[in-house]
Length: 214
Image (cartoon, rainbow, N blue to C red; front, side, top):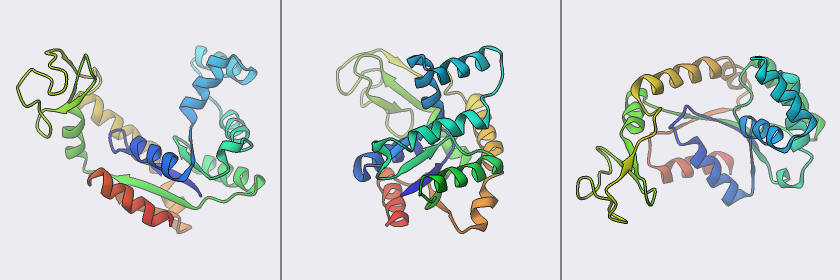
């Protein structure tokens, strides 16, 4: 199976992708992670990407296509891939079609995890975790049993992600909508697009995705 998994930050996309990797042996291809890995490894492509970023330029579609093309030749993609962060435009979607075809593959499904934006803002801005053991909590949905004391290790030190603020979260949602909107009609017209309620219980979301892929 070769799929695109879409969803705004906080929708649970990463969790569901990890589940597919474990249960189905699929490979998650995150273009952001792949570009960072190329830079860290000091490859020719990595140097090219670093030069562009230092100049404040966007990485071209051609570079991303080359990166994905190389990944598709590796054995760990044999059981299918999950595209994460790509494509974001209709031009990229068409390039991906051509690329998959050249490797004897097809795109099987595009799954979007839909969210209630106000509820998602509440989910993200209420998160905090124990500094010592990293146990996660939430102000309303999963508070510590004793206020200010970790249930697991007893630590009294907690932390929140600095970007888990309402302003930042809403900006990320707006960016997601802007980046994703162009490709949805393209895939919907081909009958590949399916939507899953990303606000449901994590297990239910996994079951819904599994039904779409079986």
